[in-house]
Image 1 (cartoon, rainbow, N blue to C red):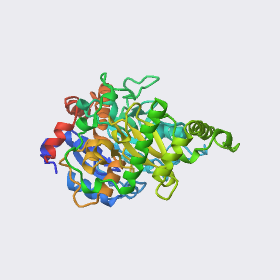
Image 2 (cartoon, helix red, strand yellow):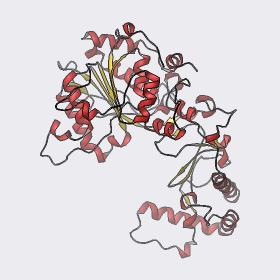
Image 3 (tube, one colour):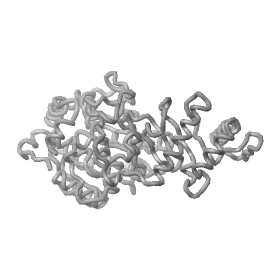
Image 4 (cartoon, rainbow, N blue to C red):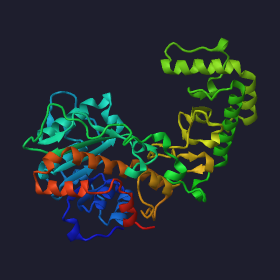
Length: 453
């Protein structure tokens, strides 16, 4: 648990941590010597980990703590939270606050109305910025502006793999939406169009292809945690498709195809029948699989019979391969995911996003799954951060639900830089500028000091 002087911390800023999980936002604010005034999460297991690491209780319900009748959230300078996004009404009959009533965003607005925090920093999944949620995004932006905040017309979208490690980046593709706002009742520097504080592009000339999991995460190459071992069935599936990859390369002289390989779709082209209502994308994959099978029917059939691909040994989702590893020679050289859509194989430079379900990455060269500690590193948590007292499954879930620490650090620094003109007009704004702008490019060393192994 990090230790700090309350007297020292009050010289910086106060923060409220909503939907706090295990403390991705707290890691940033505590590293900057912020003072916590309120933390909340409804998940008991996550709250236990939060409390044992940050020393603040967080178990509770924001709906009960911030509503029309109650305000249990203390006054603060920075409000942060990875809030769940329930749909808002699209009827047009309701506006502003009324339209958000019944959603958790309504409770955030109640806190903002009560305390007018200097900075609001909200995080959500990538889909919030997509066309299906355009209405929700418009409501969020308009309600913040109605309350006197400078907020960009579009949210910031960013992923940790776009940051070099020197700036807190990590080898994980994890696009998330950030809505950042600064209280600006005097409308200082307001323009017709306000740009997001970051864009989804590599930073400082960094090339994400240069990530190397073994050295940059790093992977623990000398040990195999017991719970990370592959089952006999998992090894069978990988061995079988590993042989298929090598066979295809030998037969075709090319890398495996970029389209999903579906063993269940292997029929000769003359026998292919695609129902008229089949989606275009699926019809395309069926046709390509049939064309490939027609050329290599004998070899594919021999392979499938050898491994029992069409028996109970292989569930339907394991009869599919999504090869995204370009010119790698073997499946065992790849990072893999067992997904409902098949076995996805990628180069071992960076990983797909951690998720809150059991799709743990498989590290082919190590012939095991990503360990909980390695998953924690992927989100920016130092090795001294404790998950003691809970199962690995709970740890994976919490990390999959969490926010990447390095990305929050970077987004906050960029936000403060953009809005210096506003922040410099108040005492608390000046303190935030001093502590954030004067902080290191990466939070890693500070957090390692706070959580020694």
